[in-house]
Length: 410
Image (cartoon, rainbow, N blue to C red):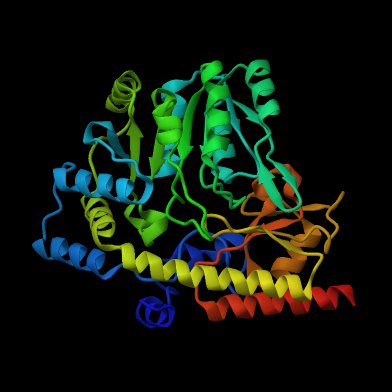
């Protein structure tokens, strides 16, 4: 399917549908007349087969208690094997209402209050929140950021694990918002450190299907021929890939039987075990028949990225757009355009943002974005930009950003 055909068929207007991205702007940003480039979902209808499967179930008219059926596991395992060379046994799989709720469960299940939980900023801000909310010790090791590239600070990771008695690493792969697709040798080196010190690894791989320009995602349990699988919990979902977040469904993969039983015991006493029948149906259908849809979608995202990056490089060389290896959410470094050093903070979405940056991005450019400060303290002058939308919106937003930046510099 060509990009134009995909856009003609699947691009849709989500306004006035109780859509968080568009219809929640006033609550989140204090005004509704903004271009929503923030939350990680899309303006594209899900694949035809997904919609048809849901319609069949709705037409049946009964939504009683259900369970996870064999063909679901088969579709999930086949997708993981075909795309990532990682077949999954049904015994390893548990489900969740989402990746973020699962992170809370893992923290409660596998750590105690005041235990150290390590994350690597800039990183998805619910990682920060789930550690704080559960009264664990948040241990930060910033990614090394040099020449617009991000890398793991292995020495600092090992140092902090020992100093702070870290019990759990919550890892993002591909990394949101650094847009890194980690090489297997990078994962091998990191996981070896965790293995030496008995650190459990939770790997959030919800963006696994969004890799670009030859980069290949490696599932954490597969690294080094499964050397670290017994200390890894993988969590992923079809929600980002196929625009299914509202169906609140994700997968948890635990190969280690002891950890799996421990998690099962935790779920029995703390978490409802029932499945969301519609979420399961949509996920299975997407994994069975969504490949061509996804290929076309990724073409649209990549074209949007090239427009963003090439336009900014040409017109605003002091502004840096991250190298998009994975996800559809690159960071944009505005720190050389807008000096946020010592700037007064204002509150957006109950979180602090530099006042000058908010004024430029929201008041002048009319954008609703996720601000870099939410992902890590070192990223005060950054924003995260959602590319999974109408190319005409991307062009309008990028052109506005450039014109407002030139006016600012004049």
